[in-house]
Image 1 (cartoon, helix red, strand yellow):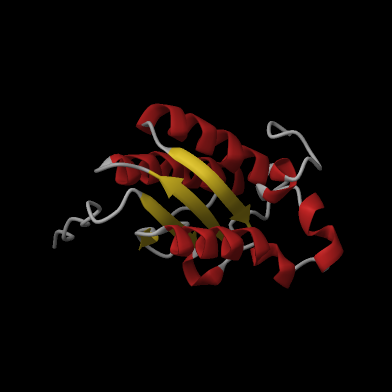
Image 2 (image 1 turned 90 degrees about the vertical axis):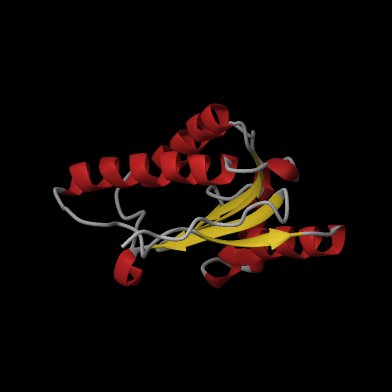
Length: 152
């Protein structure tokens, strides 16, 4: 049974997210988040998209992406398939790592863009204290407020 194609023409900005199958931890290995970030940078270059905010949690991730047309799907396919393959190889597991296809929310105006960016940057608050939010290593906020280099 084939999946219906996504309609990604309604916006250029998207809140994109996915989580581990059965809500499993997808970043349980040492170096897993840096690997995901590295693969994300490669996928950005390959697909020609822009990632403006992100947060990597334990069993899910959030991205704020600017992508035209089918570039979002190309970006997410490259990122998720390469990460899943690397994770499965390191853990000697088989099968899908993610719950399914990525989910996305099209963003069509500036107020919605600001609300989604705020949501993504605040997502780690469920794991860390408010005062440590800008120091959370696996989200983009620290780079935006000058607490760490963007390439850390």
